[in-house]
Length: 310
Image (tube, rainbow, N blue to C red; front, side, top):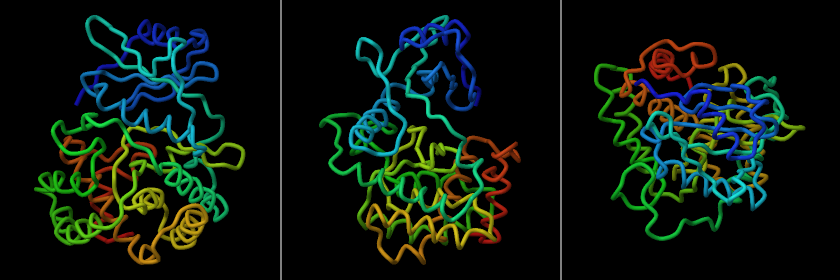
């Protein structure tokens, strides 16, 4: 799917609205969102046709709550007029812009993975879940993905059942969904928390010995261990046991987690990989990927599901 990209003048206009110095604009990422750094500010733009305000606003409200309650997250920023989201038009195409405070430091994916680092990673996830307690959006707030569906944020088991329609043509994926569906539906009956949804090492900045979480686009209700499963999904098989143990230890220092998840986590990691593979199949994104995307490309995920490498 081709996604419209904002032109230079659109980016400049958005930067000025948020009070950023346009002379410092530097492109950081051109993925689903187009992301720029402008001094001590991170500016993110996306097409309103691809991600409307109903998609962006609930996660932004959650991020505001998390920051106000001490979670280790990027600080959301409003315009001088108090707006959190700005619409900028380019030849009739609306783009939505949001801003957060820039966080200095490498992404956790570029930091040597040690037990100490992963223990702090787990603490950050635990603090994020702890800070979410009490968060609620006003009654009547529409669902961010599926108008008419109950609640505001998607439930992980609902994402799973929808994705099951897109496993055809990939035998390893069909087998994974058949094998894992009973567990996914059973977990949905247990206590759920609002999770980040994509808490991979690439969405964490290592800042002064702390793990600061960024990129709040995909919150989802699910088991607390869902964020832990995504955090460990890209670990090599050799380092996985010791680093997952450190991740779980750090998490439990900040937030409770049932002991049963120690044994369940590999199965949840497999389910997370299967869901990502189904999304790629649905989007027609069957390439091998480049750079860090290789490890979560459809061919790589299918290979791991076939070998049950979790």
